[in-house]
Length: 402
Ligand SMILES: Nc1nc2c(c(=O)[nH]1)N[C@H]1C(S)=C(S)[C@@H](COP(=O)(O)OP(=O)(O)OC[C@H]3O[C@@H](n4cnc5c(N)ncnc54)[C@H](O)[C@@H]3O)O[C@H]1N2
Ligand code: MOO
Image (cartoon, rainbow, N blue to C red; front, side):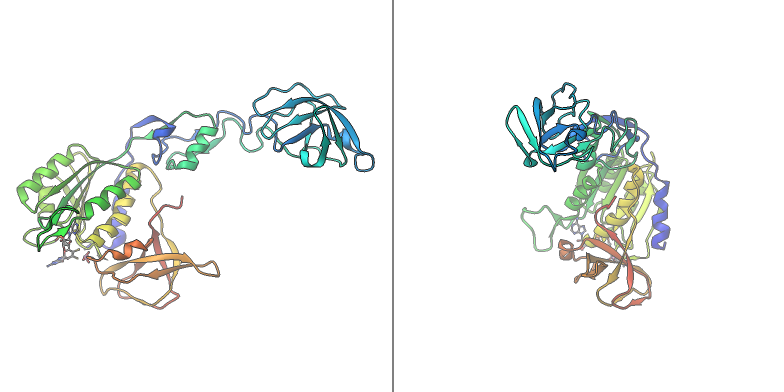
């Protein structure tokens, strides 16, 4: 049996898919950037007013506090207009985002000015540069704004748009095939016999895969039948980069998933990890290098194996940084398992002093999942340890921070 760390170390062998494609911004959500993205222009691209008011030469107003200064308003500049140069002794009506006319060096907000359409009276001095956004003050043309390997969320896509990109270079999307095995399973909503249960791992895995920015290439349900399972595995391997099989990972007479993989030339690299839940996890490589997981069918085992093992493996396949644990303080004592690392479903939150805490949730058995409604992390409890409240534990959050 492998230790958890030995198992996780295996996924570094998975290399990001070499192919990339240029995608329109609207199609790139959740995809992974293939190369650094630079700005096509300075940002802001011109000197702009930051406020609604009057563009002036600050030197014209240097005595305005002792003696009000009246200036003619010689132009009005809205965002998108091209202004004329502003001679000294004049001011320009100007609005937020509008280009500053040459000559002007500052903007007085309209609340401080008595004005009509042709004349404006100033009673305060203004500092040169006041309420002016300088060209390139944030970003220079050619500057790297987004880095290869970053997942494109809404905010990052808006950066790409603001920097002038209609398309972004993205890594090819990983295709993940899912097989859900089990003769006792019926689809939610359908008629259920007394010994049957509603199938939930398929839905979880499909949404989980999409959350990671990968594509579900197929989702197949299969009874515990060796021949049918072997055929399903063969078909799934034809169009996937990763195969996830739920159930049939253990040693019972009806557990055929590993044999079905073997029959399809999957080379198993490990079976059984010293973790709880999820011990009978198997990982191997298909004939074309596909990453193949057989996930122990208990729903909480599928959850823990997906959140940790599959997520790290997919991060390598997608070319994004693998999730790293953060540290939080246990809110109550926890006992470790004798031999296996426990992966405890916890709720991580900040306490009043700002320190992160991990609150272990009830119902931790591997067939129980009701606590996933509030779990936002898996805490790692080492084998043979009894940890008091306040002990600092490693926690993998459900969602990536970066
Ligand atoms: N003699 C032993 N028995 C078991 C061992 C062992 O070491 N020796 N390991 C146990 C552990 S640990 C786990 S975990 C399970 C894993 O078993 P399988 O991967 O073979 O999973 P199944 O038998 O197919 O299912 C287990 C459990 O989960 C339910 N299930 C399965 N699929 C779904 C689904 N899609 N949706 C909802 N529920 C599902 C299934 O009905 C079973 O109750 O093996 C132990 N046994
Ligand atoms: O490893 Mo199993 O998931 O504990 O029940």
